[in-house]
Image 1 (cartoon, rainbow, N blue to C red):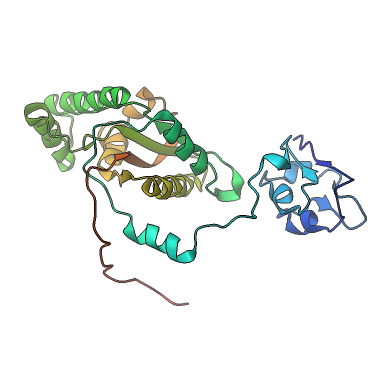
Image 2 (image 1 turned 45 degrees about the horizontal axis):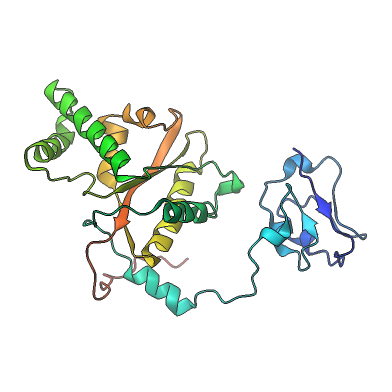
Length: 274
């Protein structure tokens, strides 16, 4: 692994912060200018903490320019503001017809990429429909597949409700699975990654909170997840998700057609103090 680890010696104060912060202890900063310990490059987990912690911006790694990073010299949302955002988040099942513009979707996705992952593997794949038209194609694919399985008697009895959902869609135009949302987002990760499913859920959580701050509603869609996992697993590869991936979760999103006036009141916390 080539780290492209560089130090601007004119800016480096030899404070040793990069060495102290490195989670795998591969930076030697005891005797002057920091350097990677011999033979230890392969142990790097690409967290970039050395770049982030440098107070003078003297350190570069992987060709990253520290001047391109966000500086932590401005205010972040207060604890009260963040608490309010979390408590007022609601699942949305009624969406406006308008699509979210591609620039906004890209901003949300790029921010979700900052979500933490186990051992910093960054193996989460986010699959998204950028337009209402593409969502409509996926919707038709899903309902047509369910219809075929149901007609051929291949839909397990315990999953029979999905046959009912398809019939309601076909006869009444009621979209139980997609809720007429303009967009779909799926997080997946390689099955061999033991942290992959959790990593994907965390990524969607980041996406959801920023989306809600923009007036964009989301719904964690367990029905669709079950369709893709148990009803028709072949759907996964048909929309470009690798066969060796597990789906973390599926989320529909779009501008909310409902305006809530207040938060709900939590039923209480299940807590075990250790």
